[in-house]
Length: 412
Length: 162
Image 1 (cartoon, each protein chain N blue to C red):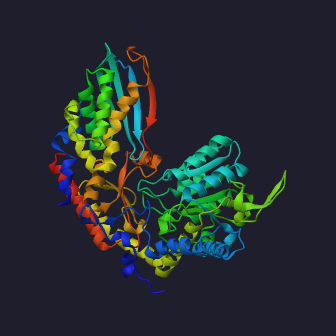
Image 2: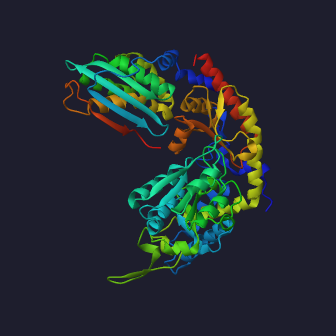
Image 3: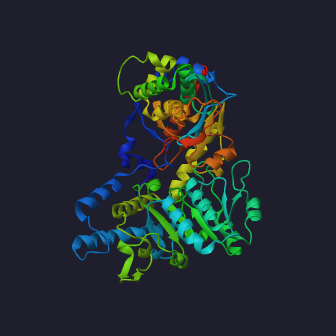
């Protein structure tokens, strides 16, 4: 072990560069995170030495590739404390995972007149698939309202979740507001009504310890690239009995057991759901990312981000004209801070910050209903990760001040 | 000082257009109308055009966007007013060439909008600058009977993806 947050930054070679002649300050981690050298090396090593298809060959390379691919699955299982590796299905990412649940599991439990419940803070990936399911089945899509500071309104949740509720699907952590939703409490509410709890964990798994059994989530989706892993690999966790009910979305390749002229049989979980050649390198790279995160420790990562937010929030609140969305207390936030400066469009602000080497996101963050709820067209967003430092926070605040000055002098 | 490079993008005339946009609002009589969205930032631009004797006799825009997209829309409406649709199409093409830095030539045909050539150095902002011009192109081509006063062609389109 011995991996420390203090030395982690040097494991990320991409961070050691100048952008627009300034040292890079990467604060767009909610969109995607950078990759440590060990993950990059693992990808290269796999393609250089072990590349073969999985679960097909009897030759040595096929055996090696399969062993590494399945070892990655076990790492994921242990990382989120799933009961069995059969409950870990490799997908392209959170979006695909959620689409599979809504598109394939959804129609098996939702009928006309039923209700699907989400919230105003959902990412489009956890909103549009449910809209489509509601349209297809004649079910009603209902929203849990938010409190004025952006936290989920638990009283509203108790009102909305009722006997007709078949599925509740919520973000574990918001990609805009920085709030963490009380998944366990909501899961108890929906289970009491006989429904299912789906969780979009894209912004939670990379940043805090997550135990899917303790949460009592029925399905839980997240992405590799937001937790130091490669793009194009993600996870669909489901309780085994429910995954058994999930009809495969794709037929062919690895998921086949026996094919006759008229009938076929399929493999057992989780392979039954992984048609075609999977993203083998992606899964192996994700396994290396999990090893890296484990060496530092998720509790330490969470505490580190908490400290950055505790430093950033008051400094940003002190900038005159800056509006911060979501809770104003650092203790109630993750390392995601969305904000707007005066009447300046966030695109203009983000371009100015980029000139100072500070990379933030500007836009609606794939959460347009939330933007409507906030009554803004878009926001800027800074999001931290384990390699960010106090210096990064100071650079962000200084860049915002410089941008403010520039646009004020420019008469905006 | 890194922000000094921003002067290339945010010249005074651009800030002026953004703060006091020309032809902002709505027309009484509309021949072509379109709403174009830039989904990367949530910006939306509505463009209304009235034609008379095969010339753009009136033009107006509304919606919300960043400094660059608002200034570009304002400059575009100035530049194409009283032009024929064919003349406007030439300007649209020249503007597109200019912001992607395809060629280096005389952009005076674009009037004030020529100052947006600084966008070349900010590739992420090309979509902001071109939104109004793409809206104009789509609006002018939304109906072949371009001279039929009072005919409203109303449709929303999306430019690019996130």
